[in-house]
Length: 293
Image (cartoon, rainbow, N blue to C red; front, side):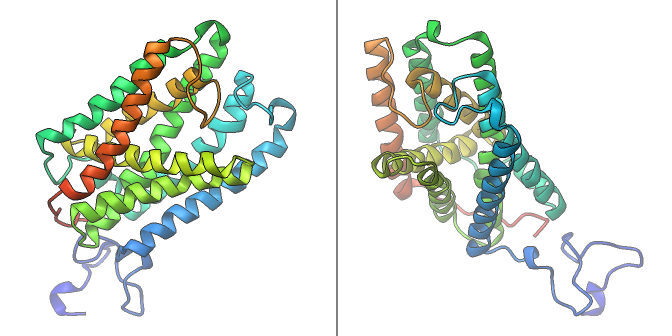
């Protein structure tokens, strides 16, 4: 270590403001972000989430309807929201300890373009259409409130994992914004392949992966054009519960009342996927690495 890079007495940070080198002179594992380490974060989160889900499923077996997880408020909260919330808490601790939190919730380092406003607009159109297509009489107040809380948990956790930690790691690794968007959206989409473990049909999983890639790209675009990570969190938190309410299930097609609203929701969904594909070729720019790297 050069003289001007040595730590000051009592200092617990390295020369760039990140974690200090180890006693052997090697930087800690996470201080050098790479694309494969971003993949490792997502895989680690999924393994943790599945383990927590298995544990909570056994602890609250009597309160969770495994045939229909949306059947009761308790089933929604204990079978769906709780494991995701615990996973989100773990991700938050990880991001804070790594020094990435301020970069994640701070102002986006790359400005968005006007065409990117299409992303939040399309997502909001889908949300409104799902609200209009919902058979509200089929849901109790407790179920609706529980789904709203589930939406918050999903929005915070999945966005923190992908548009938060993964995006920050890829930027710190020196990748351009196109790579950042594609990899973070692809990882977000592949996260949903775990639905195979719950017995979901392969065709439904494939359709979900295609849609979630487009949706993930739109969340990235929304984050860029608004300048804040929280825009993606809010949009995601609105999308999942309204989709469940309109469709009556998890990762199922919208089949409830409101014919015109269903058509609008389907059209918005197709346009979200299409915009995600177009964005692969249209996104430009490169962010400077964050101070924590």
